[in-house]
Structure formats: C-alpha cells, structure tokens
Length: 471
Image 1 (cartoon, helix red, strand yellow):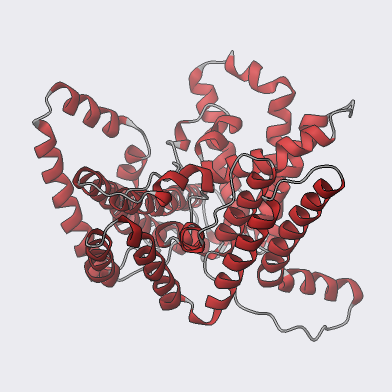
Image 2: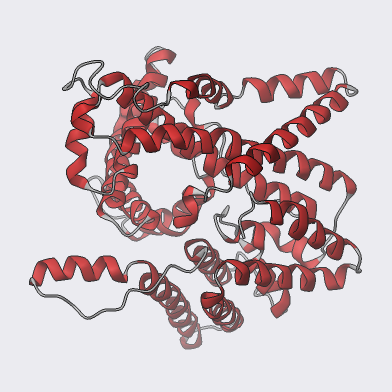
C-alpha cells in the first residue's frame, strides 16, 4: 500500500491512529503489528510468509545468542551469530540476486539454466538489514534480546519504515516499543513532516520524472548538451525528492505513533566533497555499512600495511552498489563511489578543503550528477551515447529539443526544485518561529495549503511508485 495514495492517507492511516490511541499502552504494539501485517499483505500477499519467517528466525536466534556463555560455550554464540547472518543473507540472495547470478553464469558457460526467478518481496533489503543489526548488536552486548515476540515483530515489520526505511536499529527505538506512547504534539509535528514528504513526492519528484523519463527514453544520438543535462539534473532532483519524500512521510508517521526514526537525508546537494555527500545521503544505510561492515573490516585487517582504509572503503561501496540492485550498473555505481572515496581518504579531501568553497560544491555536484547516469541506465551499452550527448558530441541543440519532447513547461518547477534542495526555506522557517512563536499558525496554514495542492496532484495524476521501493 503506497504511502502517497488516497486510500492510505484518508482511510488506513487515520484508522490506525484511532485504533492505536484508544487502547492502553500494552495493546498498542499489537495494533501496530496487525496494521503492519495488513499493510504488507495488501501490497505483497504472496510473500507474507517470507516476512513472518524472518521475524521468527531472528527472534529465536536473538534469544539464543543473548544467553550468557563463557569458554567453549562462548564459541557457540559465534556459531549462532554467523548462522543467523548467513540465513538472513541467504534469504536476501535467493529472492534478490539469484536471477542476476544465473544470468551471468549462463553467459559464462554459454548454456541456459532452468532456474525459476521469483519476485522481490516488499522491503526485503530493509527488514533484512534491520534483522542483521539486531542479532549482531545482541552478540556485541550493545542490546539485550527482546523476549516479547509481539514487540520484536513490531520492530521488524513496522509499516512506515518497512518498504524503504530508514534502516532502524532496535536500540534506537527499543524504549518507545517497550513503552508505547503518543502525544498531540507528536501528531501535529508528524503531520507537518508527512505533508512535506507528500509534497516532495507528488508535486516535485513525479513531475521531474516526466522530464527525466522523456530525456532518457530519447535517441541519445539526437540529444544535444542542453537537453541531456536538463534530463540528468532533473533525474538527480527526482531521486532526491522521491526518496527523501518517502523518508519524511515515514518519519512523520513515526512521530504520530510516538517513535523517533533516524534521519536519512540532510540536504546532500550542498555537500563539499563526496565523503560529505555520503554523510548526508541515505544516512541510515551509510551508518549500517560503517557499523557492521567497515569497522569490522578495519579491525580484521588492522595489520595490513598498505591502503587498508582505502581498500575497506572500496569494498563497502562495492557492497553498497550491490545492495541497491542485482545489476552491473549498480555494482559499477558503487565502485565509482568507492574509488572516489578511497582517493579522498588518501588525503585529497584535506586538500579539497583548502580550495574555494565554490569549487568544492562544483566538484561534488559534478561527480554526484554524473553518477546518476550509471544508476539510471541499466544497459551499459547506452552509457556511451548518453555521455556523448552530455559532453557535446551532438552539439548544444540537436534534433531532439525540450519542445519536441514537450518538457519546456516543467522548467519553472525544475528551478523551484533546485531551490527546495537547499536548506534556505527550512532555516528561514525556524528563525521566523523562534522570533515569533505565533508565526507557527501561518506556517501551519501554509502546510494545509500544501496538503490540499498535493492531494489535487495525486487525484489528477494518480500514484507513481517510489524509486527506492524497487530495492
């Protein structure tokens, strides 16, 4: 069930909030769990057993790993930990990567394989990573195992973050699950955040998608520099507003229910380096890989003499690319960032800080924008044609123009999107309310108008799926 849909906004969410508020706190997790299972069942009924299996497997492994053991008994905890990790990854690989591996194996052996490729269960990349973080945290004694199956199930299946995150560790919301609370202030603040995310999605991202789709589906040999960059920047803005819009909606729903989810974006397009960009983009994923892959790699390879940190960074971003999708373009996209980040970690970032701020922003935006070509085009053979168009092989204005593609009318929204990708308006709003608290009424009125406009767009244009819902 899409968060940006009429039935979710006007039926499912209000009903869940009412049912969540009515009972006393000991029943709220049960209400939230049934709501989350219904949410999953609505969108992907065939794979509900996969989600339930993940819940039960990690619940019982968590209990087993959490039993104190010493000496030889302590080694069993290591075996149990790796068994839990391997089972989680095996489920993820089976559903997400089996087809990719089979296709590449067929090419290598030049023989077709009789392998049935299954669909991708909703949110599998997100609830699998949340599950792995749970068992690892128990093993490291960062967290105690949750003995209440309802509470654990609620953590893993919670519907706001189920499909696209943010990837949440149990320790980040344990207190709120153990003692569920809600408040009128949380509902109000959450509503504002939800409306902001909805507007990002249906007003900005979905309209930018029209520009990007038309440019990327054109004949690249007929596309000039202007149109190519227009389409690429539109896609860069689209994917930001689409994904950050979902995050805002998820965080907002969490606030309404009394939860504080981790932030996932912090205006990444104002970054001054690629390292800075990945501190601001998909922050929960970056934090997950840093905690559960990079730091263990650094510890395991602490005696390595040459390029230890650089190699570990490259490995992490190779895996980051693979996490995004079972396709070579995502792997190359991850390797692209891994190489740049390894170079910056070797001292280039320090030198970059000494350059003018304008150059730092230009350097970052250029490399990030270029990276979206790898991300968008799964057909590697088409990269040459698009890069040729970007860098002038077809001239500034070729046969295909903004008028022939009928995308010139989106240019004002394109400029508005650039403005909203900056923290200018948010900072102005905070200063205004701090100086004059009564101004919050005016701000809330604007949120109401924004909500009405967003619903109008949704009714007229229909729902467009979230980009990261595919991952």
